[in-house]
Amino acid sequence: MTALFHDRAGGLVPEDPITQGEIDALTRRVEAVEDRVESLQVQTGGNFAAVVEGQAALRREVRDGFARVNTRLDGFDARFEGVEARLDGLENRFDGLENRFDGLENRFDGFENRFGGLEQKIDQHQARIVELLTQLVGRDAGGR
Image 1 (cartoon, rainbow, N blue to C red):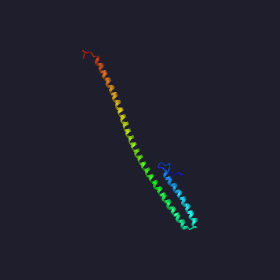
Image 2 (spheres, helix red, strand yellow):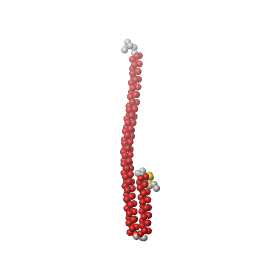
Image 3 (cartoon, rainbow, N blue to C red):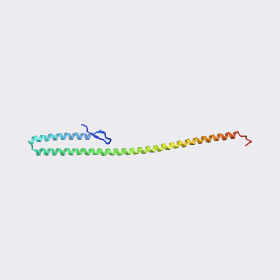
């Protein structure tokens, strides 16, 4: 018998094997106490005081056993909340890194645009230099 419980995402996940073992042990203990109660009824010939006392002992045993299981489950719940908080923190850090990357990408695009503008200016200046050199070479050295 494997118990399932709901996780925070709404899915069913198998119970912890140790906790499952404790639940199985409690189930066996309940069955054993029920057998004892039945035996007491037969032995006492209907002495209901002994039967009631046996049933009260059974209730205490079961209550204490399930209290231990609940405490253990509460511990798991707290651990899951801790893991969830850590994952949220990692998600926030990842979002921050993603935003920083987007900012760097925008800066790179800006540099690329500026570089393209500089290339265009260099080409214009080179063309002007070639034009001026051509004019200079075409002049007569004496006619300055």
